[in-house]
Image (cartoon, rainbow, N blue to C red; front, side, top):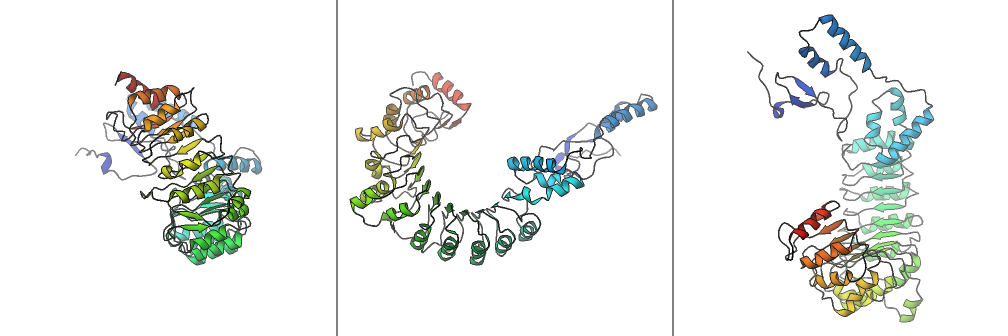
Length: 490
């Protein structure tokens, strides 16, 4: 009975013999998966290349001795030497370090250790495991695996990313075994226990960067951690947390971190309607702050006289300030907005990124007097504002430096586009116009005046035809220009 052919879906996957194609005679052709992200090289090599089997079938009419001679010569020419070249171990270690600095230790080191015994020994060197990202699935998310890694590989680890892991007792184990940790990312981690956070605070004396976004960390645990490590902490991210009921107490503790450069306290739940804090004391205690994100919550500054505000140090190094309201409420009182915005930004000359989506109507008065002269990224979407003459000055003020603009869901956006394009060419690279009422004539002018534009978002723009309304990036910008040109005078 002839051999029955089987479809690709009916063949069980064999990692040593990946099936690329079924020939007419039913033979299997192995494919080369060496560039596959999931590929793991086998310790065993096939005794004979698959191509030689096909060669034998094609050479049935040839003399058998001649065939054997040809195949032997070809086999010798394909031999690969698995011995290491005569290089000192220090050189090989430097090569491994260079690779790891670009690709990370995983999965490179797991594959390299299968090449030979020397490479296996090199792959276990602790210096190659100082920065480890365990979020991509190269390692199974099991606490037993994390324990083994901490005991056998991570003794010198300084930077570890455990985002999306389920942790209970494993965090205590890894902090005990890895005392040199400086950066710890625990975002989206489940079963984050107070004991684990306490262990992190007690054992990792060099801690500088912590991320607890979207976790179950409590105010008490977070406060204890910051109080023990405040002298070295440079970055704190506790955004999207639901259990920081005593957040005002946590914020007072954060103000002790004199080296703090990045703080993200966005989208917190179960906090007071208005979080009140001493803005001037915050500026005095954290003078090196460069990034401040505090969106989707409402803030008030403790009462101060005008003289006290003017004499405050401000945040002179602040480069990014983000305080959007994406909740759809947009009802924060104008007086409070002006007070908070002005007191935080009145001495931030280096400001580059400003995100006030959903709060534009409340903040234009203070934006007009900001000292920042070279803003590069402005996000003013999700607003029902009308661009009157007093507000057009914002675009004239920063048109020479703006590289990114977000005007999503803004009405009367054509006035902003006309103001932006009223002068010489712009350095603009990205623009968000989702849901806006931009028209073709303004889009043509924008494309003409922005030669560096490489990102245009036109989804849900009701004045454009269906084939135009999508995202355009890089080479697609040329496609957009051709489409606009083909529409003629529309």
